[in-house]
Length: 172
Image 1 (cartoon, helix red, strand yellow):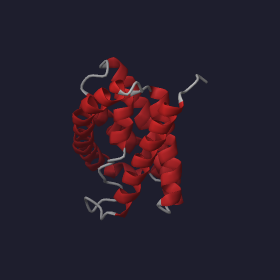
Image 2 (image 1 turned 90 degrees about the vertical axis):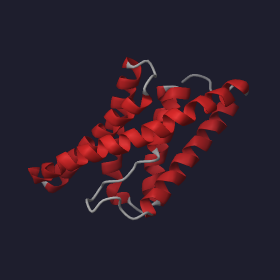
Image 3 (image 1 turned 120 degrees about the vertical axis):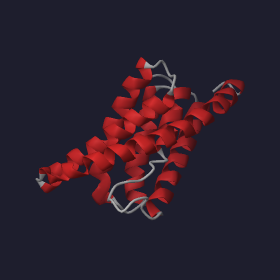
Image 4 (image 1 turned 180 degrees about the vertical axis):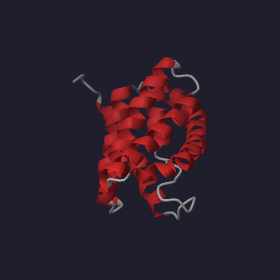
């Protein structure tokens, strides 16, 4: 493992805290739609920002911290597998798309990540229930993924430039 500066470690811990806070608050909000599992996924804005401003390893570590602590803090250990599988598939997809797009158009990266996240969660639901009827949710989940992915992607897209300037100015 590369040597990581104390300053960078503190910044990543702060990003983890922000992502966790967003995740916990969002878990307490009423659902966006009458369909189980549809939510904005605002904590993913942090992952997207980290993919733009840092590197994949840093973004992955913050994501794992958020998923593990978020499941504990939100009292949703039953949803841990859903979050983990969706989050990992989302992250792998976003990393690949982000590389292909050379860190441009993060909102496109976000849409593909949201789609992958929903596919990962539906896969876990199929395994847990033993029923393919879960796939009936697929069209609605894909529409919600595109809409929420665009929203979180644009949030990251508009936030990242100012953050990059701050990080550069402070040699982080």
